[in-house]
Image: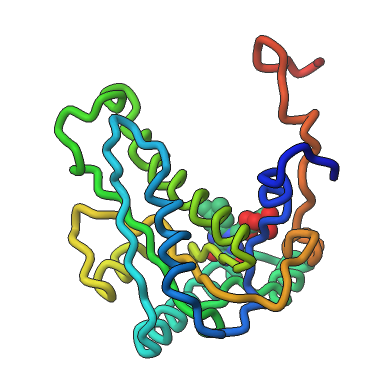
Length: 213
Ligand SMILES: Cc1cc2nc3c(=O)[nH]c(=O)nc-3n(C[C@H](O)[C@H](O)[C@H](O)COP(=O)(O)O)c2cc1C
């Protein structure tokens, strides 16, 4: 894809990584740059509702990985036939193979109670945390690193595991670290799970399209 600025190469080159982590050490300066990028994200009312819990401990990651395996089985049990077969070949995390995990949390009380811009849309706080995640993901890609978002977990489990307060939500468990390479095509597409939707199908003029449009 042609682009006019290197940022576009990063945007289009970004991948969700599960199978390409090398587990090599990560330079502290690089990690700091990536976290600084995340922390530079926009946020509703400048609430900056995110925190980043860095998890390197092998025991903690093993415990989380066991939980992910259980949740994977829960999801697999909802599938039948061909879909179930296809899912069985898909890796959903690189928790043990990646260099470290970064758990991104959302604190709805940060900057409260009068968060400017959140009075009508409570989710605007959560959106802000997701923007921090996307900044982290793109910065890591620009550094030649891989990121894998793992959502096969129950929030209370992660809260207990990491001592996160009841009022704070663990939004994402991110696997981070050096990789052998980034694939050109998303894993789910490579495994025939889903294909990417053309941009033209997602862009609408003036109003939501009618059934006949
Ligand atoms: C909110 C969110 C949760 C996700 N959870 C998982 C997950 O649990 N396991 C996984 O392998 N990928 C997960 N992904 C990655 C998506 O499968 C991936 O982004 C999508 O297939 C497109 O691939 P790409 O990121 O390489 O472009 C998640 C992505 C998002 C945004």
